[in-house]
Image (tube, rainbow, N blue to C red; front, side, top):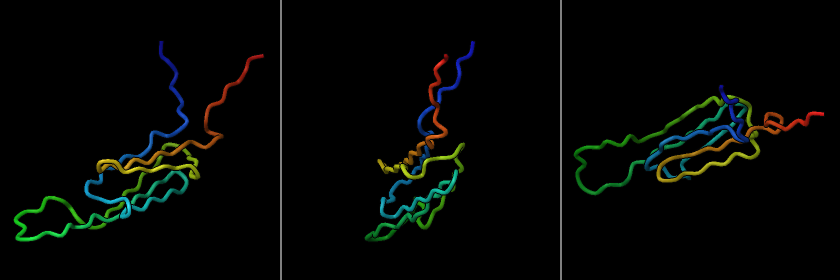
Length: 102
């Protein structure tokens, strides 16, 4: 016997690893089901000779298409330990509601 899928009040969200990027250098836009994350990884000032650099610097852009419509008035984003998390709630009409049997 299978169980029906659970319907959550929000879409799972978007997580992007952005090590070394400050929140001031990130721009997030939402339109319909699409989320755009743009920003810039800035090079840190260094003293002395740089023998090897493994961190990518410069501008970046991510575009994600969400599985369903979203409520773009209540979106929350946080940056914690180099991981950007964008939480996107479902619109009221897409949330499940209980129907009483008469």
